Image 1 (spheres, rainbow, N blue to C red):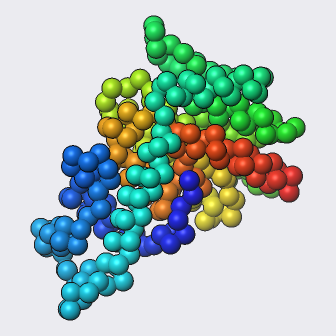
Image 2 (cartoon, rainbow, N blue to C red; image 1 turned 135 degrees about the vertical axis):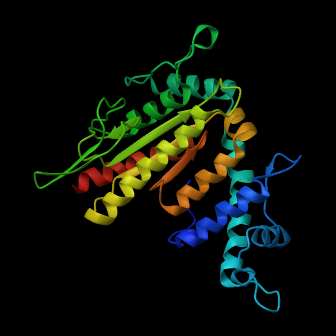
Length: 283
């Protein structure tokens, strides 16, 4: 999913308001299992509680200021995109297993299909990662792909080292040196809570995105950056607030290009790999 252009490029104080209002009013509509849209009275109560100037949101005649209108529009958008688009695409382990095996039978891939890190009965292929690898392999043409980088992405220009990223990501096309695209995969089919390890994955992706955004602004080099996540119980049942944070990060420009949610990998990734190939051809 790409960011909605209406909310790209908004100033930091807008996102400070989004985060603060969300934290104080809650991300989920209690008892409904849906994302909450803070009401105007909710927003006013937050401002009063924190001693903030209500005139930033409301004019003297109780109409909304431009900031107030943007906030209400964004909260409605975020709730709608998560409730109606993201939720039905997040897969549980049974659906992910089925999609993986159907794709493997159809494509007969030669790429790596790694196992997950579980033990015993839960030991199985890493279903989302396998789907990602198969779809890239099917669409990459003659270009190589690093499906399991053992070094962080490095950017070089005219023989000069520009940046080596802080972390190793889960994949790079066509290689980790001057990649056209990099991606991180967060699949959690067997977790029973939204724990610190899952939350840390969000902040790791935030770091990646901030570094790549800095590179783009300072050098003009655009490395396409993707985050791919799945695990319906973990992300939807336990982690809806973090899904909201992901949508916020996407629109802040800190997941530079797209977040792919569950089955959206199947729907969207082939077209993305074709775009990568076209970019590689242009070089």
